[in-house]
Image (cartoon, rainbow over all chains, first blue to last red; front, side, top):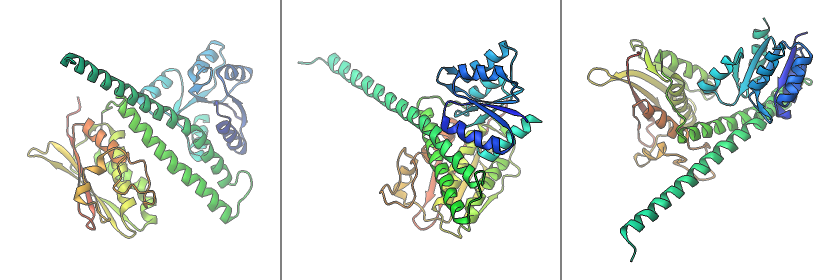
Length: 119
Length: 255
């Protein structure tokens, strides 16, 4: 069963994602801070990490860097951002994200992206 | 007696103060819009979960009601995004990202995106001409935004069963500008209001009971995006005789 780590500081959002992914048959964990996300990411192999860029204790991309140093990078990381500008997109791809999704991602589109990146 | 220098200094300080306050308001608008997005996005997603029956099947009336939450939320989100787009432009954060692309393909794409709404209202939306147009070297996302706004408005203000058309052509002696016309058989705009519609926060009918709500920013953003390209945007219309919105974009060669 593929494992998804949701890194998102809004419980309102992550709780919705949990329902969607569990319903689709994935195992799911959530983290709301950079610290939390590094811990969750390092304790178990992650297939897909959904990464919010704005977290209370830092940038989502800090998570990626910390996991890289621990050799615990997720198989794929999909960044989620409210800003669709080219600079943000470029920054995420340069940091190793497989794609950048513009929030809010419609539910079907989100599931489609997850399936696509799990292949 | 106050000296001319002192007066000038006072004016300068007042202008500076007003600019600072204006920037503060813009920043506030940007922050609040951004913060409104997250809970709103969550509301939409939770409603989608219910609508899709993930937490148990709904009957038809329940599903219609939940669809109302999704659609209403989406409308609100579009308005917040419009405010954010506008605010970013205010802060001079807007630059053009030019790429070569086909304008007719873009027009067709925006038509397809708007088709469900048009069909629901019994409106036809078709592109005329432009097949011979060379690739345009411009900011595709921004022109898509302009087209989306003009076509969206045409749908909004045209009575059921009407017609909307988009004509793509070239203008100028040497065909140096791209000219796009978005026309409709809607209620039209009185000549007195032709300038007003492009002004920020302006709506021809701004009463609380007006039939169409919005931020009043759509056409102001469209004008900004067109002018960033060095083009012009204007409207030709009379009450009861439909509207024709035009915009031009100078055709520049790709490097």
